[in-house]
Each structure stands twice: as C-alpha cells, then as structure tokens.
Length: 284
Image (tube, rainbow, N blue to C red; front, side, top):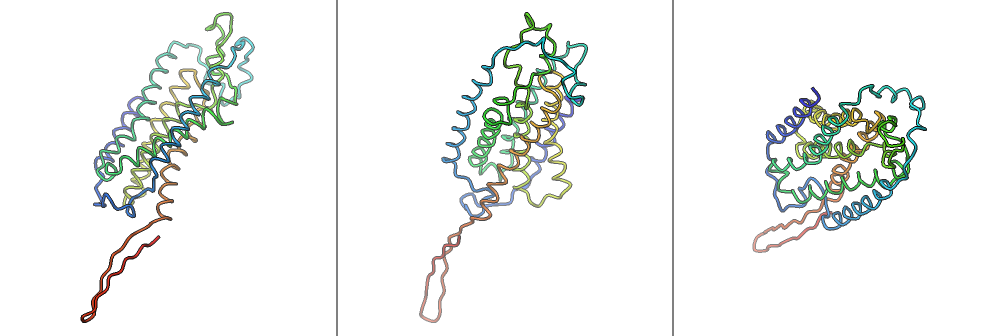
C-alpha cells in the first residue's frame, strides 16, 4: 500500500509539472527572474558544505563499539517503544524499500526541468538544490542536532542476539535524527516550493495538493526506516521537519532576496519640435 502511495505521489508531482503553463518570461532579463542566485559563490559554499559533511561522517562512523546487552527497552520512551517487532524477518526488505524512496526524493527536483519556464533557469535551480542538500548534510553531520553530538542507539541494537558477543558497532549510535528522511524531504519540498513559486496563479487547493504529494515520499521513507529498525518514530519526525524546512526555505530566501533587490535598466527618448532627448535610467 505504501509503495503505491509513493508511486502516486511521484506521478502527481510529475503531472503538475507537465500541466504547468509557461509565462513567457524573457530568458535574459534578470529583473524578471523568480530567484536571485549567485551560482559561482553558492556552488563554492555547497562544495564547502559537502566537504564538512564528508569530514564529519568520519567522526560519526568512527564511534566506539558498545555493549548492546546493556540496553534496556524499558528506557525507551513509550511513544517510541511500540515499534519493536517480535519477528524481524522484514527488516532487510524494509531497508531496501526505504532506499527506493530515498533516491526518488533526491532525484525528483530534476523533473522540474520538464517545465519550460523552470528549464530556462536550470543552472540557478540546480545551484539552489545543491545548496539545499549541502545545508541538510551539514545539519545532520556537523551540528548538535545530529549524530555527531547525539548518541542514540538504533532500534536494531536492542536485539543483542544479532551481534557477536552482544557488541554492537559504533555506527548503531546514529539513530537521531533520520538522515534518509531529511534528505528525501529536502528534495521533495524543494521541488514543490520551486514549482509553486513559478506558478503564482495556482489556487490554494492546488498548492495544498502539491505539498501533500511532496509529503508522501519522506513519509514512506520514514515508515520503512522504522520497519527496518534503523530509527525510532521521533527520529523520523525530526528528520522530516528539518528536511522540509530546508527544502522550502532555500528557494524562499532566494525569492525574497530577488524581490527586495530588483534592478532594471531603462532607455527612453522624447521629442519636442526640433529638439530631442535620450535618457538612461538604472532602478534598484
């Protein structure tokens, strides 16, 4: 059922891209662009963010092994404790299913280029998206919000019989928060926000449908990550919220910047009798 919902969400988003009508905006007119983007500067920032994320992952994955036998399920809050299954046969399948949703969410923004208006700004949109995912990566790997600081055992660690001598690998302390969910949400909500910004004529109902569809892939990933015993529900809730915020705010900040820093160059001419004049005006 969840798999069909994921497929339906992707098809719905693609359908909304396909039916979007062009607004006949001039390609080379910066004043009419939806977003104000400085590609070289922002790609440099994204590269730095990626480097910080990769470096921080070494610390995250280098945690010391720990004694899974010392873990007690009764120490897990009740709102998270209910997810422990008696039968773990579906864990591997759920993990693979979560990866499908994960990669779908990452790739979905590139479907925006089916829209001719967005396609003509492909470099700016791609730059923004790289920045969004870089920001998401830094939030996960290099801030106090993520596993570089927070040690929380994954649900799978509460099955010590799965480990030799009951010793779990240090990477199983990386439950909080869910990077899979946050990365997926960053992708789908980024796509929804960009599509919405390029079509301000859409009704509230259409936007609600758009963002509802954007919610389904990260929710699908969240459910599968819980089923795979990689995260508790609260890990996925936080990941969903942070990823959605990054996906929406990255285009929104660029949009607000463009609205407040519009510039235009105008050329005018006037004639009175035998006299004529030409004026050149720059408006910020």
